[in-house]
Amino acid sequence: MAKAADISTKRLISLAPENWVKWVTQIPDIVCGEIINSEFQWISRESDVLVRATSPQYGEFIVLNELQLRYKPEMPKRMRAYAALAEEKYNLPTYPVLVNILKESDVQIPTSYQSQFADLQARQDYRVINLWEVDVEIAFTQPVPSLLPFVPILKGGAEESTVQRALQILRADEQLSQLEIVMAFFATFVLDSALVQQIMRWDMAVLRESPWYQQILREGEQRGEERGRQEGRQEGRQEGRQEGRQEGRREEMLLGIELALEIKFGAEGLQLMPEISQISDLDRLKAIQQGIKSVNTLDELRQFI
Image (cartoon, rainbow, N blue to C red; front, side):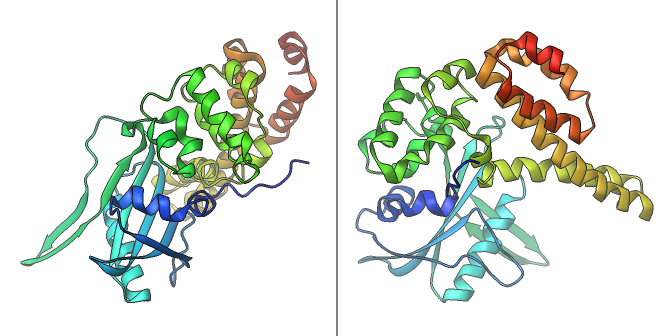
C-alpha cells in the first residue's frame, strides 16, 4: 500500500506562502499572513487557497489563488463569485489570481469578468498566470518551491536535464520529496514516458489523491451525465447519472492503465490501448491494471489480456 501524501493545492502553496504571494501578485513588499479557510456556505473548493496578506501601500487584504488544470470558459464568472464571497466572509479586499496549468488551445484567456444588464454593469478583474508562459528559470532562481513540480510544463522545461535539475532539489529536501510524484505526472505530458520511468519514482495510488487527477475523473462523470440529459427523459437522466459514475470510474482506470503502460513499456506499450479502450467491464480493467505491475514483458501482458 502506497504511503499517503499531501499533494493538494494548499500543500503546494504552504511550502513557502510569502514567496508564492510575492510572485503571483508582483507586490515586492507584501507580507504573508495565515492561509485561511476557503470554504464558503454552499461552496467548497479544493483548488482555492486564500492567503491573508499585508503591504504598506494596500494594507490588509486577501490573495485568492485559483489553480486550474485546464482553463474553462466559465472561469471569469467563477472568479467574480469567489472574490465576492471572500470579501464578504472576511470583510477585506481580495486580490484574485487564476493559475492555468496545462495549455488547451491558443484562445486568449480573459483577465476580467464583465456583464451588463438593464444599464447595470458588473466587473471583476483578476490576474492570469499561464504556467506554459512562465520561464522555467524562475523555478530555480526565485525561492518559489511550489513551482518545482510544474517544471516540465514551464516554458523551456521540457528537457531531461532540466527535469533532472528540479528532481535533485526535490529529493534533497524531505518536505519537498513527496512532490516528485506530481512532477512525474506533468513530465509525461512533454517527455517520453520510458524516460520518466528511468529518472523518477511513480505511484498512481498516491497521485489519485491530487486535485488534478480528481478533476480528470470528474470530467468523465460529467460527460456521462450529459449524455443522459440529452435523452430528455427522467429515466434517461437517472441512467445518465449512473452511467456517468461508471464512465468516470472507467476513464480513471483507462488513464491509470495508459500511464502505467507508458511508464513501464514506453511508446510500444501504448499500442495495446486501442484494444484495452474497447473493454467496458470494470473488473476486467482492474485486473489488467494489476497485471501490468506483475508482468515483465509486453508478450506476457498480451497473454494476460
